[in-house]
Amino acid sequence: MSFLWDIMPIDKHLSTVPETEGCQQRIETRICALPDDLLLQILPHVPTKEAVATSILSKQWRYVWLMLPKLEFKDEGSESVGWFIEKSLQLHKAPKLDCLIVELGPHCPIDVDVRKWVENAVNRDVKDLDFTLLWSAAPTSFPKSLYTCDTLVCLTLSNQILVDVSSPTSLPSLLDLSLHYVVYKDDGSLVRLLSSSPVLKRLSVHSHEDDNLKTFTVKVSSLESLNYDENWLKDEVEDKEIDEVEDNEVDEVVDNEVEVDDLNGSLVIDSPALKELRLSEVWDYCLIENMSFLDEAFISNVPYPDEKFLRSLSSVKHLFLLFSKSMVACCNAIKFSWLIEFYFFPISLVDWLMPLMFLLQNSPKLKTLTIDMTSSVSHFPGTSRVLFPDACCLI
Image 1: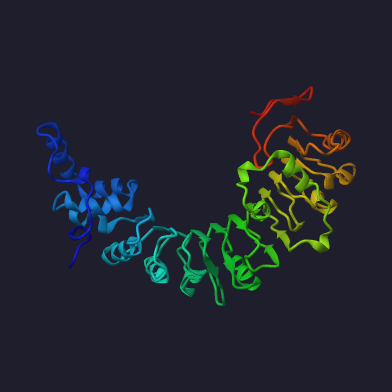
Image 2: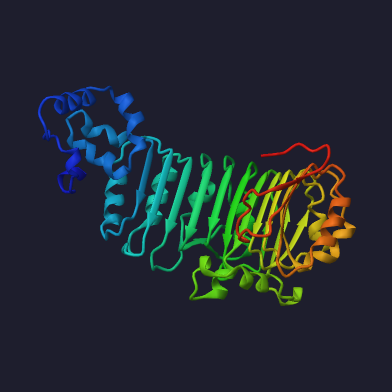
């Protein structure tokens, strides 16, 4: 059997040669004498590359990393990262691999077989799988076995990944799903992925213009938390960094009147168990249905809401709202019967005082109101509060 330590560079601080005599040597001796069970609890807390390197400390340490339940590989610019991951997975002997995290950067060769790595993890009953592909290759599809993995609890797919889901599909244990800047083969792939996850609780989506979807539909009866944002604003400013956009420029973008027919696509949410909703930079038409148990809603840069959109939030208890011009006409018609806490962030170009009065009149249970006219549209920091006579301050 060959070992990685025979050919990989070893950091100086892991050398078996003591830098000083006495105390340093006694500490190393005590660490090497620890039982394997304890070592297996320690090594998951260090990067996998360092855990592999500990194999040169002593004969006892030589095989410890082979049984680690978690492997994490992050590309630091080395062109050999693919080779290192490949060899590590070949040597790894644990019967079960609880967690595999892989991040490949732009310098990684595009001919590495990431599909084989995913297959390896699935075959060993992986629970947490996190892949980020930042390389220059075309979006890569994963093996079909990924979408029939009975043990998978958390799944994160990011960047140059093609979500290609065909029947049959079953993810009976999946609780957390993150889809960040991926590409979908078609609308059906997304629908099948979500419908095959009967116990899904949390969904995080970072969408972008080239994701190959016209309609993003979230119809999951078990879903409790949804975080959805789009990358539209970054595309619009092109050469400018997003942090360099002046507040007044963002105000102008948010308050541009656009007909619904002119929007690129739509976001449809039909998840009756939803308790937490976060929408940011949603430049598509947004339709929300069947949401009567909502506890918290964070609405930032949803420029084209209609009355039905705002009415879908009427059961919310804690509302964080970036108020845009399109919302003005709806305020007097919607009653927020359960609203307790209201963070109000008006766009500077909007005449917001009267609409706010209507909102307050239609919120009989409201206890805390926060008005923030200075914050970035991307964040909801705490600011001064206006308290009603019988209010309690929520901090």
